[in-house]
Length: 326
Image (cartoon, rainbow, N blue to C red; front, side, top):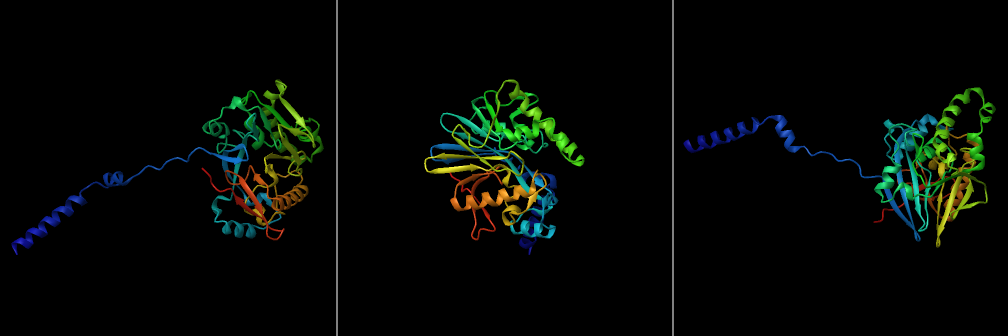
C-alpha cells in the first residue's frame, strides 16, 4: 500500500508541475513564425527564348463589374473554381519580360502605385529574376490603361532608362488627344480625365527623351507581330512572338477572369470601352487560340498567367495553366 501511495504522489507532483507552466510560455514553445511569399517571377522557356512572368500584384474585382451575368451565375462559377467568394473575383496584374538573346523586351509594365498598395512589384521581381531595369531596351504596351502603363515610370522618372516605349497609334490618339474628352457623355468625362492624368504622368519621361513611339497594324517590332484586338480600348493590341516552331501570344486584356469569362465568354467587364466589340474580340481570339494551340500570356490570369486555351465544343472554354518546370 505504501508503494502505491508513493506512486500516486509522484504522479500528482508531475502533473502539478506541468500545469504550473505559464500558458504564454507553452504557446511560445509551440509557435513557429509564418514566412512571406517568395518573389513573384517565373521563368518559361519558348524555343531558344526565355520569358519571365513578373507579378505586379493581386486584387479582387466586384462581381458587379461583370456585365450580362447574374449574381447567382457568378456565385456558381466561383464555387466551381473553389474561389473565396467573400473576397470577390480574384485577378492578377502580370507583366512579361522576353529575353530574345539580343534584346530584352517588356510586355506591359504593371500599375506601379496607380492602383493602390496591392501593386507595384514588377521592378522588384525583375531584379529578383536576375535582370536590371537598364537592360530593358523595348517596352510593348497592349494598351494605355494605368495597370499596364504606370509601371514604366515613378514620380516623373523613367523606370527603364534605356527603353523605347511602343503603343498603337490609335490608342495614343484616344487617350492623349485633348479633344477626346469632349466626345464622351458628360457622366463619363470625370473618370476619363482621371485615367488620362495617370497615363500622361507615366509616359511623360519617355516623350521628353523622344522614346515614346507608336505603331500600326502590319508593323513588326523586335520580332513581335502586332495583332489588333480592339474593344477593351480602341487601340488595344496583342503581340505574337515565334521561336523555332513555338509561338506565344501576349493577349492583353481580352480576358480578366480565368473563371467567369472562360465559362461565360460573352460576359463583358465594366472597364471595356466598347463592350460589344470586346466580347466579339474575345470570342474570335479564344476560338483561334484554342484551335491553333499557341501558348498564351495574359496579364490578368492567375500568376504566372502563362498557359493554353482549351475548348471541347467551341462555346465554352477552359484555361490550362503551364506546368511548373525547374
